[in-house]
Image 1 (cartoon, helix red, strand yellow):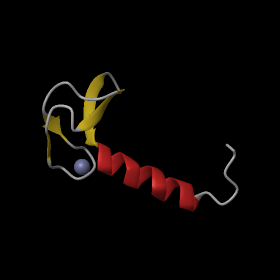
Image 2 (cartoon, rainbow, N blue to C red):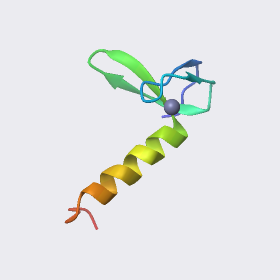
Image 3 (cartoon, rainbow, N blue to C red):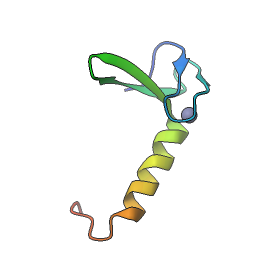
Amino acid sequence: MRNKFKGTCYRCGRDVAAGDGYFERFKGRWRTQHVTCAMEYRARAKTSTKTGGQS
Ligand SMILES: [Zn+2]
């Protein structure tokens, strides 16, 4: 979900402008990350999984 409010990216620690990232529920709190950081994380997760269950 796109963030409606400005926040701090929990991956890189920088400010995230409203609409410039995603936010998600985590342990009863909302946390925000950049779209770019999320994509980078996904790409990294994908390459680290050799078998890849989803296809
Ligand atoms: Zn970030």
